[in-house]
Image (cartoon, rainbow, N blue to C red; front, side, top):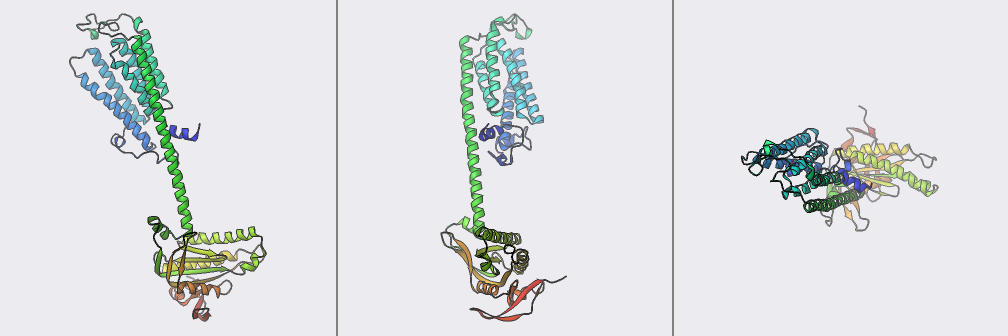
Length: 453
């Protein structure tokens, strides 16, 4: 059985649907919400609607039968038929409610309908509409039992029609007081003068009509289900594609920028941010070591290092801005400033240094970093159309970059502004003055670690 065929057949099973199907087809609204008979927690919205529709049909059977039962002009036999319709409808509703199985309730109803058809046609014969009523029962079976099992009830109904036609002439003479009327003074049950014969033409038309309408509706119903399954598959594929594109965007741009671009893809993203922490990290002696490594090992090593960095950045809720060769840039405070971002960057720098020192260049010498950290105002935005990227500019970025390039091997070099906001919690080396290219003399310190206690 194909996956798609199994999928539309699953709409009619009593088991919970797979996770990918749980949100299928339609919300629980309308009749299903107003008439929740037989609903269970594992039902899909579709199966709830089917159960409510079935319950509605049963109630619709009960109402006219109840009204007719109190008509004094009807014979005791007809009153008995009315009572039977009321009784079997109530029993079927009870089965549906207590078992929560629509298929079982329908089979109870179907068995009763087949029996009453045999008896009713045998007693009253062809009343025109009586031969058309069986047309609708297989149609209800398509909805409640499902198109793949409804054919059983088509066979049953057609078989009942053929059986009644075949046995009608051979029914015994039988009289009953319930059947006594002015036109039937002897109370004949099966051969009453009021009984209209079921002719070969009438039964043939009834059977052909029943079969034709059944297969027409069955085909239309199955095609509708297939269309729903295809639409659902396409929606799932679109959702996956959207998720993948969204994930790719978030790998390139900060989350807040992605959301803004979703709202207006054409807008210019350019922000002046007052309090951003910028970290630059660079692998020491990467270029000479890289020249001695095969390309595959080089890329694998760089991927290993930067993937570990990415995990740390993501866990801290910071933003990776870019990588360039063996350099790595991170920022905190794009959405809101504060010392919390400084602390996150400080912990990130310590973890990055520790992770790097545990690795080596192809087993020949430990890896190490130079790191620079500064905090202050930046200008940030998205530039380009082909392979666009998010970047930052300003003195804060320049100073963080110069702190990184002038740091000693394994050193996390910070500006005086960074130290001033972290020194209550973190330990620093004594401050010293350094001349940084393009920035002049700057007071710098090395971040050592978190203070004990």
